[in-house]
Length: 366
Image 1 (cartoon, rainbow, N blue to C red):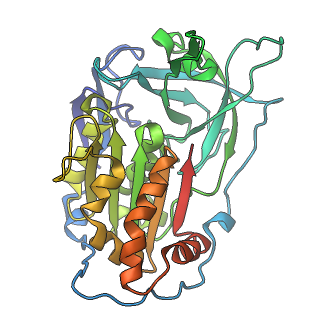
Image 2 (spheres, rainbow, N blue to C red):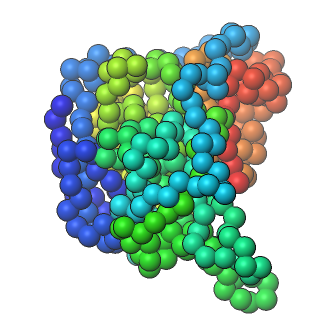
Image 3 (tube, helix red, strand yellow):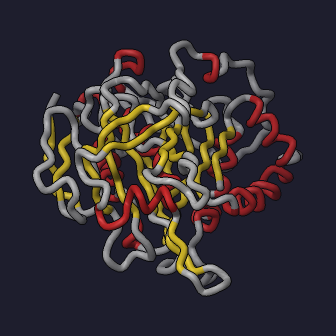
């Protein structure tokens, strides 16, 4: 399998065959080497074709084997009283200098002892104690690496974490305990110990069907689970996933405030280059872009440009929607779909309940 070395300004990690060339605690510049799907496999890909000229009543959802019942899914192996202690292998800032806040990509060792799947989360317990002298409570983070990890050896886990700093009503600067433990000024250096719990969660597990249409809606660090999905789809080969001959459609909408906060941009663009017929990518940069009406470009604003196409996809039995990030975006998406569904004589909120029951509408927002 061929490897490609790319110099990135905001992309993390490496695969097993590649070494990280600069300091693992550097800002911005470092190298990523990842396997490339063969052009032969990509050539066999078939784009999902969508008709927007005819509409039909949404079909009843077929009974499926629940992804949550799949064998081998591990949850809560490690708990706060007995966490797994790994080590930081890599920690770098992946937002630009002009970004409103800092977001970091980090890789921790697990030695294969924290077996997770794409779409799960892990807990992190910051060092030290709280004001009452008790250990800090865990903070959950969506996993940003595929199940085999950024190094491809199933012995690491990666996170995408934004450093939380804000001013409260009293004018005091408040720092999030766990995010600052993980991110601040590169204090968590390679070799530092990290206490982890989990893995947890089944809501965001990806469908096994390599022919599925997967629509991913992310704001900010909500990109994390989708990075794990997309690495599995486009950068790796798996016997149980038809050697990554992915014939479905993966469509990512990523909403951020500025272009300096477009996380993993080079990785995503590389995926689109590898599989142009199977991967669609749309950014919504709210402080820099507007729509035709001059409105700020939020994720739901960008989606509205494709609303008829999205509705047609949502009526298909093998379309899965995943949403991760800020809670407010779900309301904006509902507003888009209500009128479209009504044109077909369908109540959107009733239909969304059907999608949820069929595990075709998966939400993890905060």
